[in-house]
Length: 401
Image (cartoon, rainbow, N blue to C red; front, side, top):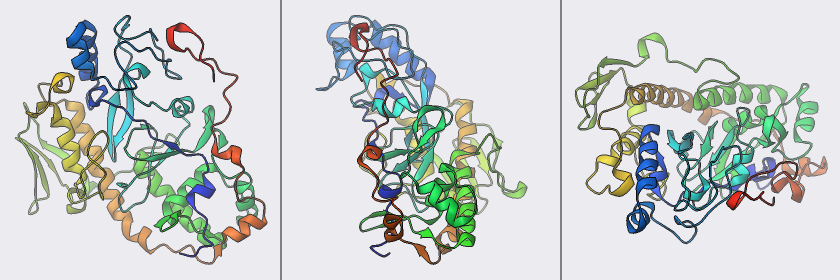
């Protein structure tokens, strides 16, 4: 693409590195496992607690930390002195297409990125830039992303869907060009449809033609609805009746492996079976990120990575708190598997349309500069002020923001 194509960094100026957990046991696919891990850690003492905690330079059982914004915390003192009750686990996007649970206690997380927690609510959407975002472009999630390594761009700079994280004046300029109001979510949908990786960063060509804008918006809305499984309170997109996956035989005990039969399109988990599962869903791969918290090995298939994450506590190498998990396959995971198969199949269905989409004659970066929209001001690259908001710091003191 041309050097005159706007970059994602121009259009959504505020970006934050994703949280760095520092220890794997603070997240898990099963929320009850996290409650068990908390209880075991809180009941341990001395060297046993240190071993289970896995201290780093930033976090140890003796160090206190501020409460996470928006999370009720019984204690901000060191975990060794006052663990407090277990906080309710929160849903996170732990890895691409893998929603898990996290203990929301800053004393346990090396770098929690409080600025993301401050804007996390039911109105927020997060765009996730990571090496492993797949052929459909960046990921979008309603949940706090802990994908590593990744840059996170919230759609809104403040809670309640207030103050879009867009170059100031961009929605108004686009609205004048296209003959109707343009919302922040519209811009996000266009990014999903038209954005492409380039040597300068993620390039987002803007259409000069209103008809091309509307075509891209329609495609982007469908991509968004699949990724977040429904938009604006709507029902999650579903596959047509004949292609919709169902549980054909229940998963009992613990499945000894995951497989797929190309003849019947049947996914097998031990004695359990799910079908139909299309080849595109089974073979859906990600480019890969470094292994570790939130990472997947290069070329890993999404379904296999998802299954492996749920078996991790049973691996011989698992030790300490990481080895605590469910003894039998939870029924909730089967429901999540059906939703994941649907998501991957629908994204694969949309792939040819997205690859063929052309924005037409461009609204160039030079045009945006001439209109005063670019470059974005420096303040747009920083978090919005939260001086009107009090947060509890270590030891019960109010945090200085």
